[in-house]
Amino acid sequence: MEPRKKSSVEGQELKDHIIEFCEAQGADLVGFAPVERWDDAGEVPPDFRPRTLWPPARTVIVIGLEMPLPIVETTPSVLHMELYRTANRKLDTLAYDLTRHLNRMGHASFFFGRDVYANLKALRDAPMAAFSHVMAAKYAGLGTIGVSHCLLTPEFGPRVRFVSVFTAAVIPPDPLVEKDLCIKCELCCLCCPKKSLTMREDCVIGDYDKMACLAMAEDLTRRGCYPCGICTKVCPIGKDRVLYKQKGMRTKYLEEAKALAANPDDPEYKSWTHVRKYGLTKGKAAPVSRTGKDGKKKEA
Ligand code: SF4
Ligand code: SF4
Figure 1: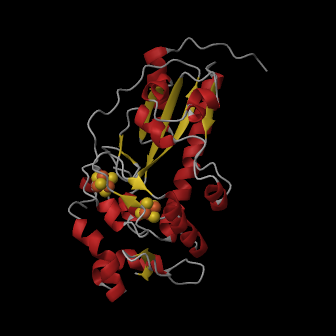
Figure 2 (figure 1 turned 90 degrees about the horizontal axis):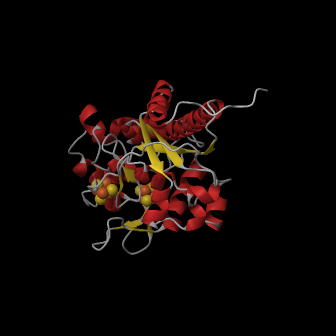
Figure 3 (figure 1 turned 120 degrees about the vertical axis):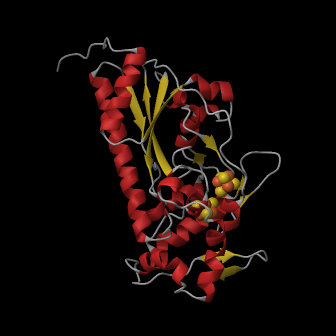
């Protein structure tokens, strides 16, 4: 095999080339973060920063794919689970292809795949990812982190998934998003079936009970319709709501659990409940258990 020569394509020209490559493969968002941003911000522990994971890294390229709102609204459902899997597969393929493309150009590269954990038990034993794509997307100027701990983007709010490619090439960075996109509406906290999220006055992000959220993921895995994502469904941020004419949904989201507990066939929610009824392990939708203020499980 011919030794790979360093490409003459560098700087802004390389950045434009990468954006064109990613968009041709279907990427919705692409952002560029210099690895120094992890050190400057000091928010991510040193062992979880790009240069620890792969020392030659100089730039992290973050690629995002939209999770279409009307499918996310059906969660928990097999339809939503399939979307989640498809997005993850496509992101891994995009990252793999870009890594090899950059290597062929002579720019050594590495990618950190999507959900890099063996199973939910592994998360229960060590509830932290080896690398955070959410933080990478923030440092690549794609959005800001909301109360829900998700990255909110102007385009899709939190209904977007990310993957990260590290490269030894130095590429002009994208500016950080300075203004918080989260409007602290509290909807993610109020609609969370496990009460995993709590607003804080002193901090942009909320308190997050990882184990309660994980318990929800375990419930849904048993039912065959993982993940939850209700906090991403209800967030009002994102231009996707304009496209789908789905603004002003607060009351409908807030009342969903109560309305369906009273009438599982409530016509207001028919398009979501129909999807939830089919394709599950037992052939019907199991109820979502919610944790009440008294700490006891309730079913909706
Ligand atoms: S639902 Fe509201 S509080 Fe939660 S992340 Fe979105 S904007 Fe922020
Ligand atoms: S994924 Fe579900 S359980 Fe976890 S924080 Fe979001 S709404 Fe709550």
